[in-house]
Length: 381
Image (cartoon, rainbow, N blue to C red; front, side):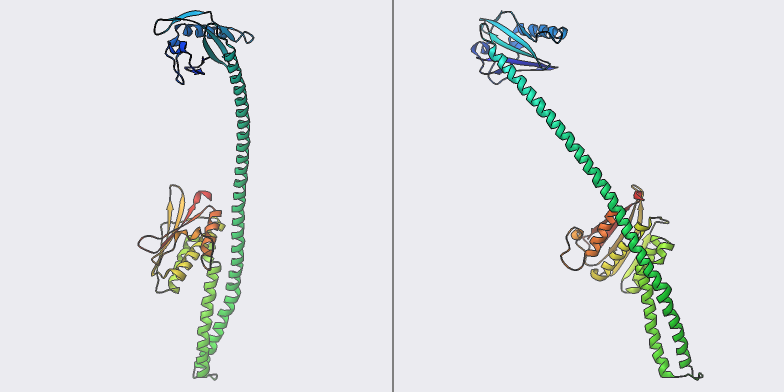
């Protein structure tokens, strides 16, 4: 037996046959597996459903939810009359209509509706469980995100403390070299210079040309030691970094590189007049630039080195660029694991910069060379 089960919802209605469409319904234009509009096929039903909905709207919750029509006669498309009756039920706030021929049992329709109720209940329970699981998952994700955010803050704080502790030790060593070793070497050079002058003077009772020549060689070596000590002091902890700031120190680093490598054309260009940075960030930026320049000197075979510093207003960002015209560098170097000697310095700098909110970017243009950019969001200050 075929039953037309029509579920009318707010503003929309969908009608489908449950089972095979009976012959009497086919005569009214209904077909298997196709939507069927009973209000258009059966003229009485639109009035019947409207009455049922008004009845349910006025009735209390304890009123019957099933409304059965009287038997009526309906002509099909061929003019043949059919005796029909209908059953309207209220299920989960929706009006459900069942149409059948006279004398047919509505038990099948009631079973269908009961199964629909049970499935709806099961679906509601599944949706409730799913919603609870989703809430728990969102809560766990939010908790995990908060934990990761806290861990990142702690990691940045630890990286900052490590950088400061390392720089304090470098500063202590540099101060010892400058104030003690450097001073001792300077005093020793003065005394040797005085001895060399007396040995080289023909009027001096201590005149000794051979000794004067040996002392001149010693003085040269001693001056080399003083220069090396000063260079080491600058490499460990440049005094200008504390006295003048980052950018003047970078300019001094470029000048020192030019003196060290006369065959390398070095240039420094900065449009930044004044810049105050936290000690840990300024120290790390100096170390990063120094590492990039050292990498150029060791591996690039470059003829030109250029260091620039620019401020970008939107967003508030400092960009330090170290560029050379050497053999180039694979930009993926920062992402690959260490497999041999070399390259650890750049990866270490990249990681330490990221811990303080900065970024190291590498690029090898088509014309050759390497362009390294350090991008520092100044809003993190």
